[in-house]
Length: 320
Ligand SMILES: [Zn+2]
Image (cartoon, protein in one colour):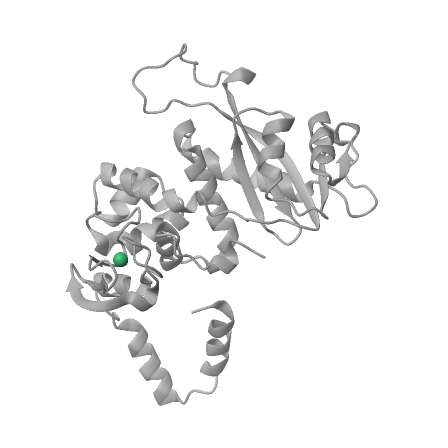
């Protein structure tokens, strides 16, 4: 249920008689179905055949299998269900997925999530990255108006790898700059967010990610780093550089990079709980944080599931 409908429903509760109130209380206390049946009702079916991409008109109901509705494609004759071809296909213990969705919302550690859902830690770890695989690519497709961009850095981490290509760092030792991974965070004033792991912090790499993202008539706000000046000129964007080192925070009343800096701070503070994330999974964690920011208080285990199978409500993700 979306937020507006829910607020309307709450408003209507005031009109209930005392008998109706008791009935509502009883209905809320009663389980509304098994976890598996609730899950099945939350998973939207595919919009096209996952095997041959035939449109939805070619798909016909074809019984049930493993608790999920099965459909058959008239074009290729193959059957599928809501999970076919998604990162969640073939995973077991589906009845715990909503519980796991809640663990994602609370950003529980692997061990805590495993305990909460009654699964092994190895399962909770596998689920984390399967659930986040699709979300890691869900980012704003266009940003316009005043667009703020800034880079932030994470330690390169080989967590979980057995053979290090470099000497191990001592705990707490700062990483040299060549052992840091740069992430470019881009936000506009409508709250559309995107971030990108950069291979290198230079004008060509930054321009490559900003070119398809930022509208041509947007104003790009960045710190005073010269590379952004080069990028803005190359892309034909109006550029406002904020000289943060001289303690200038806002230029002409509207141009600043405080939104993107606040996002960086929230991201860094949230990531601290993981005690360093393996660089090979960094994009999954960035996508996880974007998902939490995108939905804010409207996030639900069902929304996490739909993100995981790539059938989220795209109006949240890809503004026009
Ligand atoms: Zn087909």
